[in-house]
Image (cartoon, rainbow, N blue to C red; front, side, top):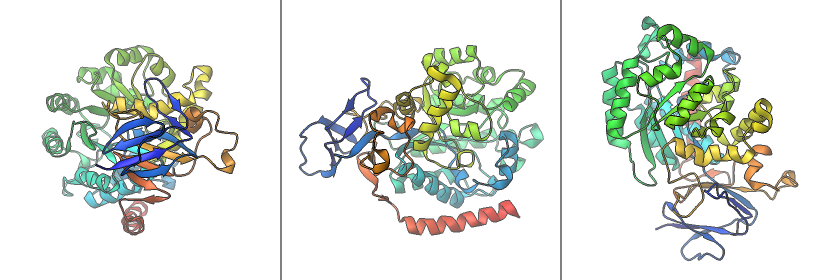
Length: 455
């Protein structure tokens, strides 16, 4: 069994139940788990990392992403668009998606995530063009395995296209039977519910304006039969709210509740426009929220009521959202954005810097239904990252390691990322892939995509 000793750390921010910040102590991992924390731990047979200048944190957990968007970002035509116009432009590109497209876009975005301390990533993939194969999410699992990333895949879909009053083009629409059949295939092939699982699957119909009620209801039934989680976009924009009132005669959350989607096995992306009563309902049901502050700012969607949700004990995780509405997969940078956004909007009612870190670690794990990761404590998954803080520009900024990442911010790749007890990134290098080779291959693939965008 592989062993790793992180020796004599300057600070270990545990995010555990006691909110401990340890100084001068060490972490011993054995196999996929943390075996011991303390001083003078044995180093026999272990890879040893000298951590005397390091802050050590639990690995970051991203609760909502769209990896395919790594190949549709920084497009001038939509840099000032809001959600519906932004989507209408990009749907035309996503009709060209195939397994190769998704494999390389996933590698690009996943690598970015890992380099900035990310260890667990949930992706919601919705584009399955006819005639391009069903092995798209399979290739995402392949990319995650190459990088050593803990990956949760959301099998999403469009079942309401333009001809039926939805937003997506009809060539991206699937039947309910097609969606359910492929969902069963993916759960049976990839979902591992066990402790320290590296692969899980959730059922994730896309949004109120791109699916019908039938697929929501049937997905909920299937998910509960298969004991997997449920995810969708909800209450992201006022346009969506108006759409739901016109199409379903109800606000988004009331529609979701009618479909069986307000429960502790569900989490919603964005949740910007929930009212007080709806937040109370989330709290009662313990339905979770993936907070996407950068995406919500870029698309001018609004500011989610995160302080109120946290006060009501709604499960909240942090998320980058898709590359196209974030332009990065760097959840580390989003910690400071989230902190400053809510300070501006809520003043002293805003979450502290440490609260934001917990959203991105143990909070995200809870949203994904995981109690085996998100904190540095004995028995937890050995997922963590390390930052060398012995740098000139950080002098005077290190009094509070627990809040440092949100209040001060850290804007470069971390020094070490460990996932499941294995070093997957160290000193500027991914350990599982040939970056130079993949960069050339991905650059070639994306050039073809941008030719389609501009011509």
